[in-house]
Image (cartoon, rainbow, N blue to C red; front, top):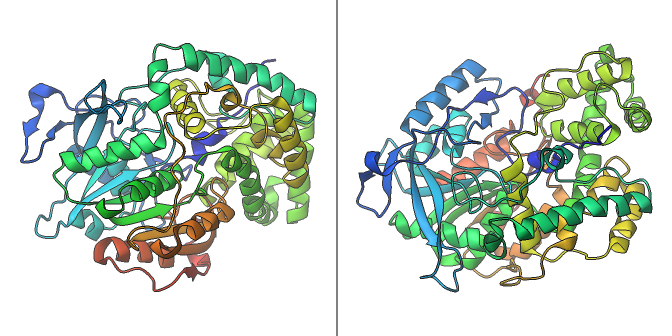
Length: 525
């Protein structure tokens, strides 16, 4: 049977999909020239009349907001969403050379007297569309006073969605394997994974969009953001980005410190972005987060997974071992690990994890959308490879990945054998147009970082490194809760209020703030 793995990094790179209880955001797309209307700035806005492939992102409804109400808010927001395109240089060293398109969207403030500027947003990635993200935020819990204060701007980064796309011509079988290799138990497993990794790297380097690869980087996406600012006629821009979007925002405010207004970075990567260290850290994130699920499952003995956290943890390894020997209903051990990791991004999804485990344990029908569909993942996976492999240099020998796996498999046994194993970046073309952007403390003190303590996708340890790199530029708010994504999807009012205060008044906490757990705000499974 063909081995498959969930695209772990799909969840690990987006704040928008932090729950299983999802509401649909109506489709959006770029405007067409015949419907666009000229505004005083240089962008021609028009209705988002065509479907954007990946714009059906979901908002995580709170206990105070029913799914039907959130869906209604989403429809209302999407009906006001305007779209357009902007041409930017492929290579900023040659600004008058070849141009590519960037798709952008706007959810305009309905209170012009209260509007203070634009809030550029990014939901994560790399490789995830952001064109519909303003509607996602409006349908979720972004406070009305924030929506009144800004035109909320979304965009598809270069290489993604309705912007000029990249492709690696991935086959259905390659898409089904996902972005992380199968769990490696031995050095030979790493060697076997290297063959697939090399093939994908070669496909990317010889595809019809290979000319984009040296320029599909976070630094150039940040430069595109500044082109958006200029086109909108704004002197500065504010920013709200989560997961990979935290790194994108950090790079932007490093390259353009004086053009940065209020910068909010949520669920933070370390200063190196999605490099080999960050990918390996997914295994640490799994270990940080899993005790929350173990406590939940132990408190619900009806699932039959154990009555203590220790028993639930033992059940994880028992199921993984059994599925390694014999998959159940199409789920092998790697996919089991991946789906579990993916759905620990939100407390609300814990019941679905427990139901999946129960079904696998008893060989019963699986819950809906298990495993999730991977059919429309080609652009996401290709763009992710382009950015992660292009941003930094990765180890280039199989032996080094074998060493990494040997270390992480012991240190973080739940996921270490997968997250530390080899991928296409090991065989990426050598051409790099510039070194990675070094995040530092030069610039105004206008960065607010917000972070869950037990975040599986961007662990707290990496966020602390970014906080140290920013020095006096940043203040960090941590929330004593698990899951990926704090604002506005999380339920810690202390953390959410701090971000809203900063976006609307410019006031940050006087020093780093630790928000206590709020048990009453936990999503009821």
